[in-house]
Structures are given as structure tokens and as C-alpha cells.
Image (cartoon, rainbow, N blue to C red):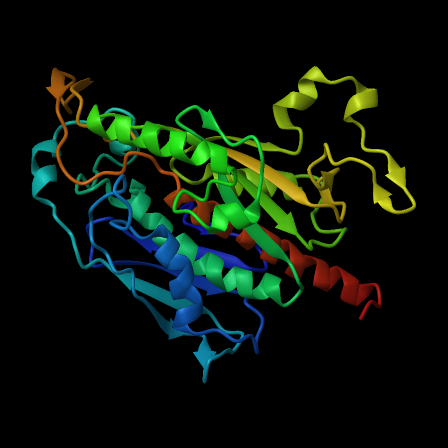
Length: 356
């Protein structure tokens, strides 16, 4: 197993490296007769593009997607959908000095220990550039979900220690940081600017809501919905933690507080975050993702080279100050892929049960 594919009925394989000719994805298992064109995917890729914000990487990639297979006259055919995004603004010169040096916080050391070889140009396969392919595949998954009235929405819950205490989706749509709390927006921008000026970076928390998801999606025992969502999100390089519903807060509750009472009208509360025993309840799914600070910073850092000798490293090149807000659409994509996969699994069960 190479670890480059994800999903069962709706299966995604990504390919490509940061400074290679292109990155892309193959989506297998997408149902036929869904409307799908490049423009459907392009609007999602634009949310992830570098160079659009003052604190993001100035790498000027247009991220133009090409659908190479799997559609006919703007509709899916049910065959594998191949998606390609060419790398057009590659600058490898700043990475030449890193051929034999491991960058702190990156996959350089671990990739080298695993394979005995590594692509030092922009991190190769370990680069965040790979997530463009996930977003493209996630756009296809969102089309599957939209046909069932399911919507996946992400926003910035916390950035650089500044927390959004209220949530207005309209407010999140209205600003570049996708901050849902107007009072937190300016302090978040100031925190980003301060990190940029000092040559540092900051982390944050993404919150993802799933609305319109029916009850009954998810599998026992190892393919629980929450387990697959957690794995999908943890596969994103910058993610170091995932919690669902009350999450770690549940550890500080009594059972009488944590349990969600059932009523004739549904659940009275939603500490479970829309998932019980690994199966969706029909309530809103609530997921939070912890993103670590971007490891590529201009401040001097201690590291070693491939000989194990100490090195004092000062990085150059084009880097983000924070993975947020660009990572939000990647998180949405991975959750969408999981949901599409489980939706198609459930359809096969329902066909045996005589459901329409």
C-alpha cells in the first residue's frame, strides 16, 4: 500500500510534487449524470490559491484545472475522472542549498529515513501543494453531496490565539479570513501582520459544519464516520488535532451533561457532533481542526544535515504566514470526500433493504 489513495466506493488518488510539472487527482466511483465542468472545480481551487492575500505565499499559480476524463458534454459518465493542475510558477533556486539539509518541522528528515531519497524542491510530495489535488477531488465530492442536499461549510474559529466567539456564516463569507465573528477579524489580521513582520508564523483552528446529512451514514467498527473524518483531516500535513462535537470538552463533563437527550422532535443538544457509534444522527456534524504554524520561517533555526552535523538554517523562498485561511477549503474537501464515500456505501445497503 502506497498511501496515495483514500476512500472505498468514492475513491481518490492524488499525484504530483510541489515543483514537478503538475499535480492532480483521479476520482473513481463518482456516479454518472452529475453536472460537472472545470468551472465547478475552479471556484473551489480559487479559495486555496496562493498569492491572493498579503500573508500568503506570493507564488503566482493560477491553478487552472483540466478534466482529462470521466465527463461527456458536461456530465459525469461514471468512469474515472482525471484532474490535472499544472505548476506554472516554480522557483527552485532557493531550495538548492537544502539538498543535504533537513528543515525543522518539515517532512525532509522522515521522508529521507523512509525512502533513502527525497525531493528537496519545495518538499516534493510532502508539500502543501499536493492539497490542490484534494480540493479538485473535493469539488467533485461536493457535487455528489449537493445532489442529496448536503452542504459542508468551513471557517476560521481561531487564529494565532485570537478566537471567534460568535459564528455568523454570512460574516465568514464577507471577509478574506473567513472569520465568522466581526469583533475578532481585526485582531486576527493584526496577529498575522505581526508574525509576518517578525519572520514567524502562526497556527489556528478551523471549524467545519455539515448540514443536511441524513441519519445512518457510517460503518461499524473500524470505518466509523468520525474515525474516517479524523483520518481524512489528519492526512493534511498541517493538521495536528481533530475533535468532533464537544471533543476534548467531553472529558470534563458528567454523563448527565454530555448525553444528548432524544425528543420526538430530535436531539435536544448536540454534544456528539452529529455522530453516535460512528453513524450519523441527522443532526449537524461539527468538527474542529488544529493547524500547526507553518514550519517554513525566516528566523534562524537549528537543524542537521544528512551527515548528522549541526547546521544553523535561515530559510528563504516564498511561504505563508499561516495555513489559514487557505487550508479551510482543503478541510472541506476531505470531509466531503468522506461523506460522498459513505453516502455511496449506504446506497448499496439500502438497495438490499428494498429502499428506493
